[in-house]
Image 1 (cartoon, rainbow, N blue to C red):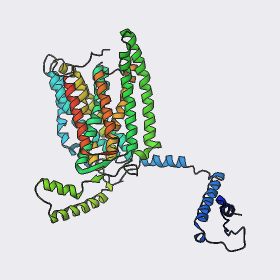
Image 2 (cartoon, one colour; image 1 turned 135 degrees about the vertical axis):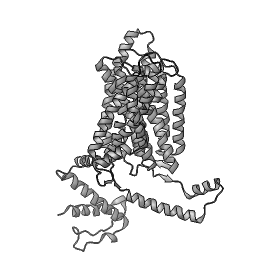
Image 3 (cartoon, rainbow, N blue to C red; image 1 turned 90 degrees about the vertical axis):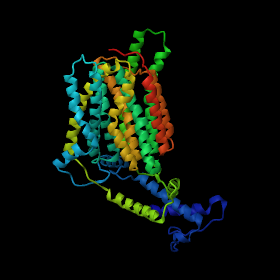
Image 4 (cartoon, rainbow, N blue to C red; image 1 turned 180 degrees about the vertical axis):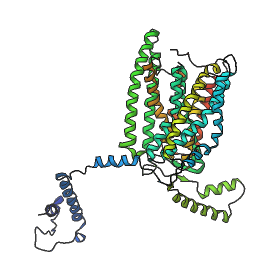
Length: 516
């Protein structure tokens, strides 16, 4: 006897006595030799009960006899792992070695600035220390030399990203985009420039959150009326940034809450608190990677019902722009716009095939060589900071907060803005905000841990003014992204806030120096 017949027979009896109503006779193969009445001839209540019985029977059968070896969780995890290394678009023909080197050297106008690499090295060794302008000249040339190196680093990262999924591509862009900041911070740490280390890391977060993210919103808003992004992932990123800001503010609160404590005792206590907090932040970052890459990778994709669909500027807006220009849109122009939209849709279909500019081997080799060049050039840059700021015309806070992050974020800045114009705002936020999360949850605690190993007294007690600026930046970004949509005005607001902070840090003298 099948389970379907049993459940159907039981349900037929139950329907007839429901709510004290008159029994409704329902024919069943088990109760009567009459032919089975099709479901279409049953009344509404009997049909509902019939389907309920079927669902209950199927649920009981699936519960009682689970299928072996086909669990949903392992299958879902395997599918996620395959998505991480599966390219978003089909790759075209691999270029040759000569084509790869040509794309590497002549792929951007920024490569013209590569001439400043040997110039900065030569000036660093040729000019005597007695020359009063040596530090200024070396700083400027090294500063300019790192910009094309950061662009090459971003270009090689993009070539690697073509061969993996979108989520892992965003993580690669954010990770390798922070190589410059990490190298500068470690070199400054070795040279005991602790204030420069702290200022450069805070400045990198401010630059990514305000300048890079603002430029993404503004550039995308020039093409789209509103752009949507993954709200759940963005809110989670905001929560992680808030936790990192709390970790920076608590040592400052500890410092101002115990004014009667001896300086030596307080310094040791804050250092111990910083070491413990740094380890916890690293654990949080590992959990964040597992969440982003495995358990909830779908939240970081540009497709899905959880993302607000971007809206283009409609015909009314175009007609309004023509009226502002005192020239109405002609019928031919409207037809041309429609044809342009058709061509755009055809182009989108053609863009399904992505042709790499460099081979995988050349991309990896470029990453290694460029990273080495950045490390050497950054050393000359850090060496010249003391002489540059000794005149008093520019402070170390301004150099660390504003100038150094501009160099380090050049690659991810260009990458994030480029993909935002292509209506991939989730990926842009993954690069901009994801880079900030990496610095806050990985780079800062990692540098503190490295300083702990080296015996350097680097703690999470940042300059109070820098900590407040970081808190206000995170708060502003939380308000901007809370609706899951963006427009050009929100980007303009973030850019202006960054300019306000730049003006204030130009006049801010900074707190006392941190020594080793």
